[in-house]
Image 1: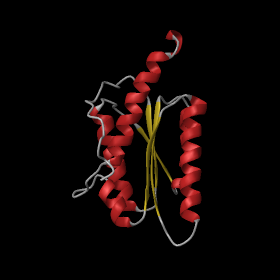
Image 2: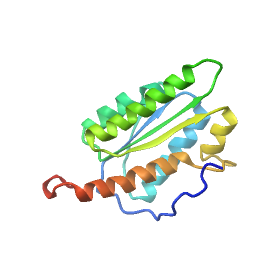
Image 3: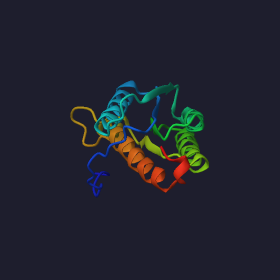
Length: 163
């Protein structure tokens, strides 16, 4: 199981942070689970009203995340799923989305929760989507990681730039 070794961390108060979640639309059942998990994490961390933005697919996640980071959000959670097919399309989309989300985080100094599932088949995606019967909840994990990192980043910003 890929979740082995995950850190145990209690939710922290992030009620002062502006948080956005950008979610792809392909594979609705998986995406519904990922989005529910991310929103549960936000609630557990006392984020009252995270902004939710939907995009067509995982390839579009970076540009939406960039717009949200540029708009002043303290953390962005990116959720998507790409399931391997018979062509190299999988490799291109996974690489572009991963590289793009990393670039957004580094260029804007805004944590981007990485909730992009890159799976060999639908069963793997469903097992990570946080649904009833799933072994993992990657939407929750991505949001919790982004929030914890936003707390750290906010703490090292110059005093005049902190939330």
